[in-house]
Image (tube, rainbow, N blue to C red; front, side):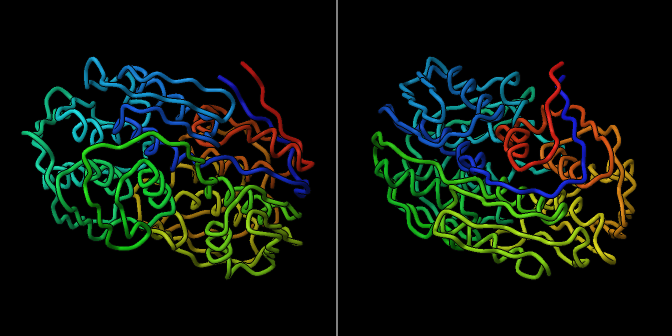
Length: 421
């Protein structure tokens, strides 16, 4: 397995082009099953999770051509609607093919999902919503087997929690349902907006994406289109937090206005953290201290502080001036990076759903192990901050969500390299 090696202690200075969003690409790829017309997707990131979704769609007989960040796909009627354990176990987002398969073909057999081990993340919210549209399910031998008698029918659905994945699965299915569907307590993340914009470009009738209530008027078929994926807000936030932990000045490029405002809002209360908006796609992030003031932050659904940046913020605060508190309100068991940060000299105490971070003057390089996607990026930040050499093992987790992270960071005058094994 590959490793990442970092010699820490340097500020970040340079420019980074933000890639297309992983969390927008995956549901958009799944939704191509809703049409038998050709689709062109631009700004697709080069990630192992994207490869997993592509392989799953190919197993359903999709014809796919990928050149750089440009993907062309055609999903004609598959020979079967079977999404195998071997493919779905690699990534939880694979479960997003369930709604499109049921809506388009009336039947689906999808393995229970895998992916990051950061909590239960139950699928019952997905199934309950799809049942309201007329689907019937049974779970046998690790597979969800779904059928529809005729066509899905529009309905009013109130989600028990504002689940991003459930909102996406129900939203996609409802585009081909008869009549009107209303999703209440819908997730409001920008990736939901991007999915809705894509579906509307295909001919869907969706309004309210990004708000609590989404309305979908079903249509009998969707067409092909060309669409550019939004930039990745978690990647951008990760590089911004690298600057917070290491100091320096970095230009983040290829963003959009919504994400720039989001980043500015979630980092608003961090002293010594400066944001300069250059234009609607570019910001400069700057910090002139290695010891930012301690913080008290909790993770929340959008527009709050993202759970997907919690681990990175934890690392960035290990050298803060004073004590910091972070409360994780979205997922349980999302503190697996803490034990690895302890190996580097961080002083962090887990108290239920909260962590208490006692800022240190220094942390030190060590050999550490990535346990999940965002934990691995927190170890990158810690390695950049640390005195001496850090070696990060199991970086295949990192490759699930960060495109060429070592190349992008090495362009910012830090000492980081990948060791091929």
